[in-house]
Image (cartoon, rainbow, N blue to C red; front, side, top):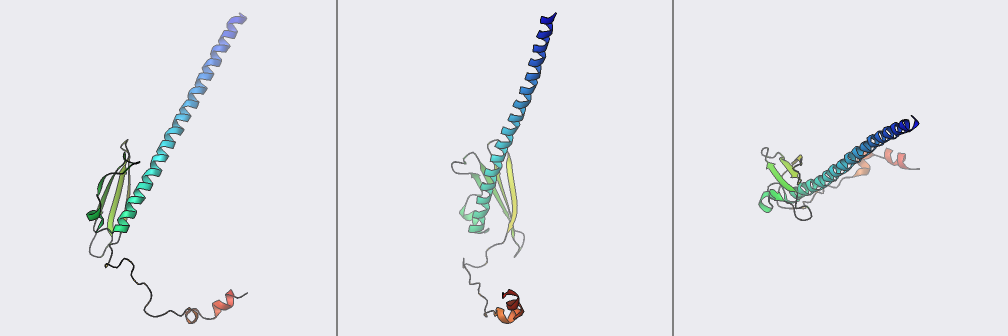
Length: 149
């Protein structure tokens, strides 16, 4: 009678152990999946930032003439695809720029922003005011008194 009871205890302990191990394996698989998804999101955000920075540097009107608007990235991101859509809104209005990247599993990440076109040919226009600005007379002596120890 005692040996049968011990056998039941061992079977119950084995079942409890199996349920616990299954739970641990399930949690670790979820954690690994979340880590993979997080890595993909970091890579996607970096690639999207690079694409939009290139559009900003080249200018929205010149970017399609100088670069491909769709394709694959260079190594080490050759499994990632990209596409850029540039839609003009109207005369003088910013362009709507949509950048999309897709990983090897087919998951896509999209960012949409608005970028104004460049005006003129000068990449570094002179931004100094036509007349010097006198801060002392504009803000008065009250600020000097408040700053003085």
